[in-house]
Length: 290
Image 1 (cartoon, rainbow, N blue to C red):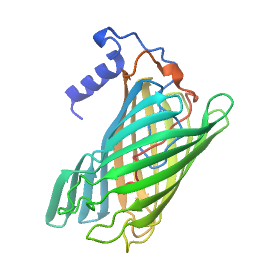
Image 2 (cartoon, rainbow, N blue to C red):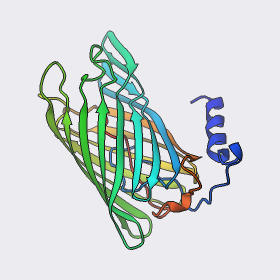
Image 3 (spheres, rainbow, N blue to C red):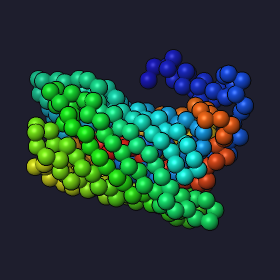
């Protein structure tokens, strides 16, 4: 990110309430992004708020196979138990030896619904249904050219005063492309964090995906990273991933930014959020990293 872009992000994150004579937000706790890791938290974006999350992901599967993506998502709190979201894999680049393919990735449309909350209002169980639209070029090998459907069950719990863990199970109907029928994909992921301060939130994660293609094997990977909260409207993140199974990329590096840009549905504020400042709503992406 260039210096000018970074300044613009900070101004947007800290001053969006002043633009258009909007009232200032009653900030009570930091934003909780669903990036950068695979595991998603149960947290619902505050009613009426728009939360933007974007970043970059570099993967190296072999010394000659590399890829880059720039995932972006927008999340809007509609009710205290419901948020709508739209995302994209962003601009993609894939390199395999002397060949290179570039283009825009797929688009994801989904919603997060709170099914059960503790007496204090903290979401304990949520679901995340998502439709993956085939906007990436199948001819270039950037996508399958088919629509995917996934449903992820999200749960989590605090561990002491500063620890938190989230667990996901997902099932999907994934397009294989090339005229082949869709196949079933399973996902299990777990993430744990222990925040040494209200700003720093490091985590570790492991995940398993049954298969990424019809004939592919299971993908198993682990990653570590951290989220740094600059203000209740702005957070940065970054981390590294290592593949455990043969089907997983050898290594991946990622980083990004999350911003609360203000009200979009009227006079609602960040006070709608229920989880503690020490908690980290984990990530990534509406689908496992590829």
